[in-house]
Length: 93
Image (cartoon, rainbow, N blue to C red; front, side, top):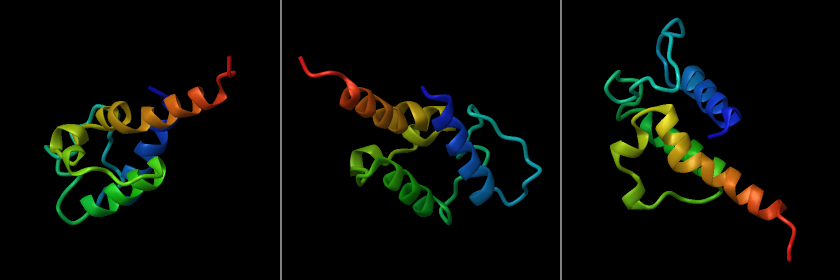
């Protein structure tokens, strides 16, 4: 997992999803259990992820288990971007 992806996602969550900016969160904070993601902001959050991924999320990907923590989201979705970029940079045989 990229630290840059984790930092970017934490910045988004802190700036757009926290009602109280003094609340400390990290990559392992439970987003649903701690009520950071709720029914009011989840659609904007999914839109943000889709923009980062340059694709729409499939229905089977839209389950709470994939959005448990920032670390979970990075591992499930954002690492795909980095893996694709690495593959794109690889020399052709």
